[in-house]
Amino acid sequence: MPATPFDWIDDEARRRADAGLVRRLRPREAEAEPLDLASNDYLGLTRHPEVTSAAADAARRWGGGATGSRLVTGSTALHAELERELAAFCGFEAALVLSSGYAANLAALTALTGRGALIASDAGNHASIVDGCRLSRAETAVVPHADPEAVRKTLRGHGGRKLAVTDSVFSVDGDAAPLAALAAVCRAEGAALLVDDAHGLGVLGEGGRGALDAAGLAGDADVVATLTLSKSLGSQGGAVLGPARVIDHLVNTARTFIFDTGLAPAAVGAALGGLRLLRREPERALRARTVATALYEGLTAAGLTAVRPDAAVVSVRAPSADAAVRWAADCRTAGTAVGCFRPPSVPDGISRLRLTARADLTDEQIARAVETVRRTAPQS
Ligand SMILES: Cc1ncc(COP(=O)(O)O)c(C=O)c1O
Image (cartoon, rainbow, N blue to C red; front, side):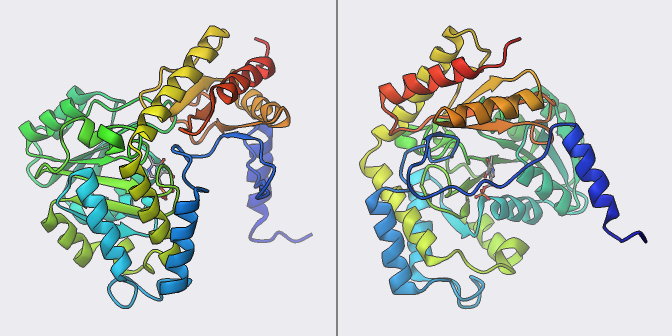
């Protein structure tokens, strides 16, 4: 048979299969789900009737889609309302809503750096930060994980624009970044600090106001945050928070904002519903952290190697990528869905199970999840 231009895809697929790294879509049914410790629905809001009603009301009033870029027809009064409420809740001067957290990171990184700039990016940062750095055309130095001194050495001496970027809570191990120390380094070196608070919003800070609130950095003139609306707020979409002049600059220059259709009204409505619920029920944030600690303690008491969680992500070591996939599948068969992280999603090559704490899990469900993970663990 003559070669086709896509034959190399089969070679790559074989290599992936040999390494145990094949990924498959597994559509879930709306009902009869297993016990869910795999999603990012930290506060248990995505199916809350107030959130789903807010989504439905917004779709009925504003339509199924935003109809255009935010700069043309895609900005509704609802987008502006969400931006005001998000900024006020998290303690920032202004906010800008985008169609995803991924787009928010690309927007902030590309608009705030550029050719000739220097970015110090933590080695454990999320893929959307990695891609934002690449797209920015700035020089990017990948610095050792959670190491403010390495950031200082990297930034020192650079004459142009400079920025340090970090996840507030790292997706893989659930550990928190040393934000106060990073801010001090950035200040001393004249650099901006960009923090992706995807896993901190709704979980950390007073009543879930996020990691920057917890670190006393929210609203500072040299600090910018990015968020996703798809985890604690139970919706979809992303946002950038910061000084008003930064937000105005993004409106005028960030390509993932300008050349992208505005976030769908239903998602804006759901995010507003989730945010208002969180404001009214701040105890959900503490409950998510308490559940995470209970999961960690149960798993370590069972002899498994887990990382003490700083927020709602609990990470458990697996002996190999293959073993992690089998372990997660066995958990699912036993009625508990857990996440599975393996290369290339893990920068250190170590595969893990990833359990997400949810504020609405009962003590009985926590015990059941721990017992399932313990019982299905690979024998080492
Ligand atoms: C740390 C972090 N940043 C950004 C994102 C991207 O957000 P979104 O899913 O809204 O695009 C995610 C995950 O989805 C994330 O975990």
